[in-house]
Image (cartoon, rainbow over all chains, first blue to last red; front, side, top):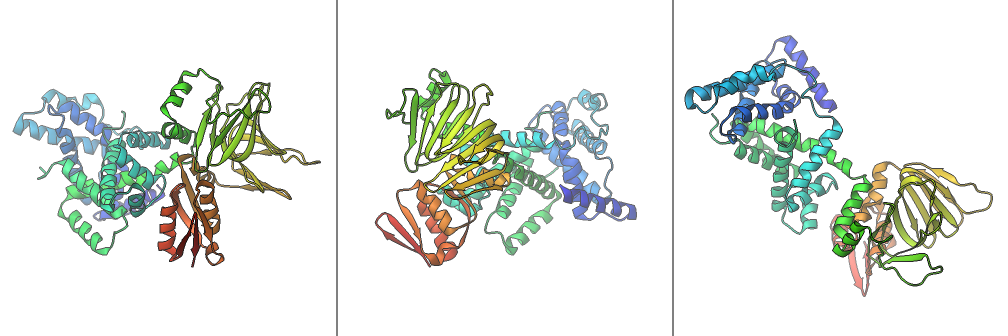
Length: 194
Length: 317
């Protein structure tokens, strides 16, 4: 947590100097400012897309655009920018593929989600986050949950987990990878209650 | 827009995080990762997302010291279905482990666990008692006071406080009185220990001209025949000392001799550590009943020799 704050300050300094952002500034900014908006973004995208399954892909596209823009200049505040990018991408789809309802896109202002409301989408407080994590953990498939538990709660290495569970390290990697994915969704996206 | 869908890219990013989190990570792998990241910004954002999530998941460790949770797990893992059903119906006052008939009074019940055993008892008032390996405990709940005698072994108490009905644990001439709390009591032949995880207890060393001591969370009292000492332990260390509730022994710079002695509480097969290896520091988490794994790891790490003599395993340099 502390390092994020540190990097943020450096980022601000760089902005004053008018230089392009360094990649690590942008990375820190992305994690700090953009990822916490994912739940709201996904909500907006699902609301607007006829095919809900595309929300994830679109979210990823929004991230790429926002990230690329930030490499030139970090948009501050992040939230209106993110949603403007999202809306533009949606409008593109309307034009090319006619898969979005125009009303939904026009709703952006009405939904009132593009305004910057500091705090509203900041990191859920620690306890809330722990609750999210715990819920996500409990929903993992049994073996995967076991591997993540041994790693994060018991602090075992992948090798030790392999010994403990009687499986190969490769399989441990597999379980941990699935765990990473599920925890990311829980923390940033779908799993998070609005 | 992107050539592949978000799911695939996110799965790949998660693979990288997992690989990097593993034991085989090296410079070559890092170079590979850097190349993957350089391929597209889609890779970068997916990686940042996975990395942030996995880092934040470190918070899960907070689940560790919560012994009440562990109780839930203990119940889930260890209770025979029938016992659980009985407890759920709350039809009887006490669910016995091995309620025996050797009773000094008619209201006393005795609970025992064998070497390597572990059981949890739930009382009607919601209090729970977890018995560790090789433990004998008697209980009398009929009177105004709730009384428990720890004859030997170790037990963890999560007591539903009731000022009208004090909960007392007797161990020889020593008494621990609950004042709303979670605590553990261990009684070996020469040594007595009480550790408080939450709330407050009163500890009476049971000797003339010594007053009861009030113990707060983190307090650990160790009493031998000749002396009583009080130390403070961080909650993490206390939580580790309760690993047995999940069948785990957790060592943090414990000497090999002490670690072996811990294992010996749980297993018929006894470890004997030669003087030359006794002081080696052990760090790690082990299944209490898996002496083999412990032997294998110490062998690898310290390059020790193991010799089997019947039910004894001698560890030497």
